[in-house]
Image (cartoon, rainbow, N blue to C red; front, side, top):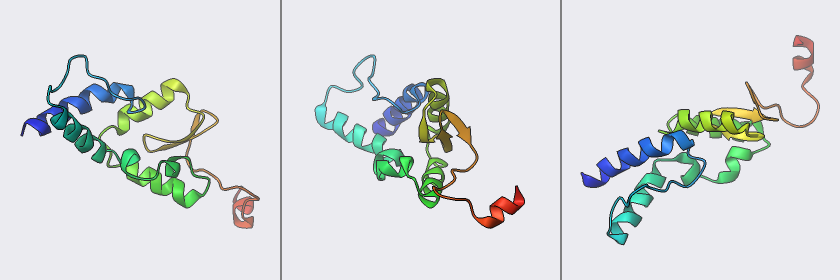
Length: 123
């Protein structure tokens, strides 16, 4: 029960940072190094960007970008991550379930190369 309570406290403390930087407590959460390591592992297990391939959030292929966005939907830090990315004007990647291209949120990342003819006709 104590670890679950500490995890909740860490999630609240880390949310304003958007999960983009390492969380450092103002006061030690625990004096026991084994408990601290276990707490860090449990905290990291809740974050999809810490448990999956980090390259997925900076992928070039549209299917991989959509997969990263889907993983972000269940993240407890999604809102903080998006707010932090907007504040920092992240140049590219998936942050908080949104795709950034040149520091701006876009609806879909278009793959490299020419657009499909059906997309040209619709435009």
